[in-house]
Amino acid sequence: MAKVKREKWSKEFSEWYNELLESAGIVDKRYPVKGMNVWLPYGLKIMRNIEKFIHAEMARTGHEEVLFPALIPETEFQKEAEHIKGFEDEVYWVTHAGLDPLDVRLILRPTSETAMYSMFSLWIRSHADLPFKVYQIVNVYRYETKHTRPLIRVREISRFFEAHTAHESYEDAERQIKEDLEIFDRLAKFLALPYIISKRPEWDKFPGAYYSIGAEVVMPDGRTLQIGTMHNYRQNFAKAYNIQYETETGDHEFVHQTTFGMSERLLAAVIAVHGDDNGMVLPPTIAPIQVVIVPIPKKEAKVDVFAYAHEIAEELREAGFRVHVDERDIRPGRKYYDWELKGVPLRIEVGPRDVEGRKAVLARRDTFEKVTVERDKVVEEVRKTLDAIHENLYQRAKEFLESHIKRVDTIEEAKAVFEDRRGIVEIPWCGEEECGLKMEEELDAKMLGIPYPEERARIEGKKCPLCGREAKFIARFARTY
Ligand SMILES: [Zn+2]
Image (cartoon, rainbow, N blue to C red; front, side):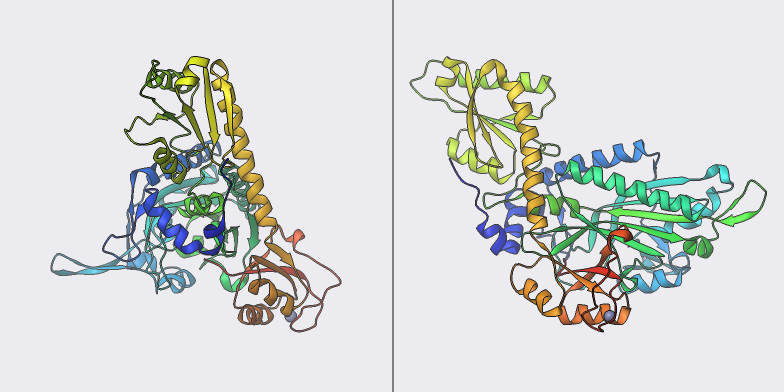
């Protein structure tokens, strides 16, 4: 039996990742605009399966889907001062129509607050319209100056999910953030991804937000990847865009707003976290092909392995599985290699002896274990095995995450963690911005924030390693993507 190898995966992650995106058919980064990639059919199918779950969650929680234009007039973009300051370095401008300069220049949306909120002010009239919950999945554009990386740091985010909500009160907006966290948790379980949630420090909030929280996973090289964010805006944008509602008593009040954002980074996390040296390992929930059947014909054999393979495939399809029979005229070893690379969770091998004995061989992608099962037990065994694969992927990733979070008391210990096995460092912090920024500098790492909810971040009896004052929080630091 082959063994799980994770040498290249952990030691040369960048190279592993780039090669895999190409060889497994996820995206092609040779498109002639830097930081903009072409989605390939297989990658897109996986992403669509992730989005199917998101659409279902949105429906379950009463969010309506909308679709806004990609262009935003400069005049709208400029209404919220902090927001424009946060994005002005990154926006692409449309300045001409044909040969003529435009009267009002347009930006390609980097996110849609400034596109949506002038419309919200027309749509939201009374308390009866609230809570107001919409979302869209669209492409957004950000001129990234850092090193670009497919699905992770790109100039066109192709699958940007953004939910925008408006509420009567701060308390109701807070309830929304809790709902977002619950949706995120269900999605993460669907993807078998364990994660951590942190409340971002003041200096790293979303531009215009009252507070921001973010979800991270740890990548194979120990750096973290942000895969989800939630923001409470309070009435900040409502005041800039005049989004008011009439209360039951006839007064006019500004709404409270929140947003929830995710992107194709979810797919990057799935590929990175679950992979190994043989390629991707997809959770069965999102695998375009859950079971691949490889018939192994032998010249002298009298039985039809292809017919037998199709018979099994049909039965599995009827039971609701996504199945493919690989009939290519190439050696079985080559087929195994291809499907392992593409992360198909389960392979079924059928040779003449299996046909004669009414059996089939099940080979797991996550552990490479092989078992022979009775023909009439195939559906039942496939169902059990796919569940076991999902659970194993989650547990393996959880162990990896937990072994990459280290709590320390001093800057020296923190530095040692980053030099050694990397990951996330948790360190006492007085809560002052000055100390936080200084720690970022000394550790050459980013403060992800404090554990969320805040009760989990509070500590007693520890000193801030920088100023020596009583520490109020545990702060998390990591090298990030
Ligand atoms: Zn301090």
